[in-house]
Image (tube, rainbow, N blue to C red):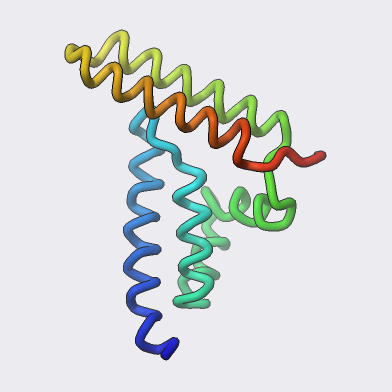
Length: 125
């Protein structure tokens, strides 16, 4: 059964990874939850891909840190939210002409703020 499920988990993990990487440059689109989802899907679908992900010099440390602590520190949350809202402000103020697009971006930012602030556990450093 697991052999049949593995390709689906790998595909979903790869889609999640792509969305997470897009979230690095698209304000309002969260990166961390998608990378954590990718790690979970790869863990179940391909130990080799999971290992490559956690050994990645750019994102691996954050995934392992989250997995080991089961949450984020206040400092990490503050940094994440500060960066997110800085990018949302810059994008909506300087680069968006559509009020609808601005509202959607700000709305997604509030969802991201809620997730980081209340869904993801705050842990000690």
